[in-house]
Image (cartoon, rainbow, N blue to C red):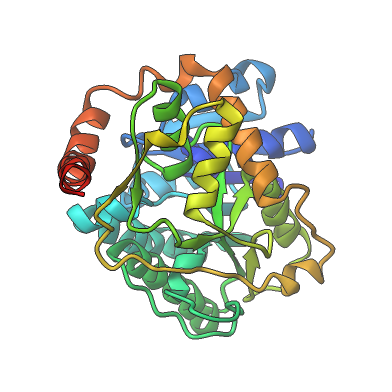
Length: 348
């Protein structure tokens, strides 16, 4: 597996994984296949074409386009697919589920069919801890039932089921990782950590859902990339591997940590009306991937600090994003919530 197609490779985790592979394996060739939706960004891939000339290529195309997928596999002589391509933001899935069903379900089907048709050596699916749903106690194991509670989580769970079905039915060589909340360089600032960091830099309010006691495992994206690589190299075909730090923190603690790093006051925090159907807690049992020899290099707190400092040092990347479509989305998602929070504060 030395000629990989990284679908969704211009997005957050996909671009970090592409960079990781090219830097680590001098004999690998990578094709980034990306539709370039709002969260796909060629800046994420920056210098790769020059640094890795002859080993890196980019193709703008949709994973739902079967003929484009087939042509890419044939023309680039691909022998493995790692699928990061997905609509990923829960809030947007609540507003408009259609795109999530198309990409996360139908797109997964198209890639699986191509893997079967061309008898590729591996198909790896990037999934999420959100497919397990709310976990009030304990930690989710890979054998636990999935119980998604948002349109996003349901679309990812559907893709997971297709991957398993293709393995069982067609003996397709598949593996899967379910990651906790990834943070790090190049994450689109609609996600909570870069949203709060960039808002705090500009002394804008931080819209914290509900009481802020939702529990999350924040893992550094490079740790996740190393885990995916390990599963590709040593994972058992047909198996799922949870990936996270194995620890967790409440969102209010994450928020306070960002403010402390930036030297900003806690008065920037606004407790706003909660997301519909918001899962209170995710928690992954990561003993299975640890048995392969993987350990995260960063704690949740270290991941938050590294991520915060990256956004401080890379305003060139995010400032041009937080305009246009982003502003429209932000106003639609948070405008009324911030207004409601302000009214509640005045009444109190």
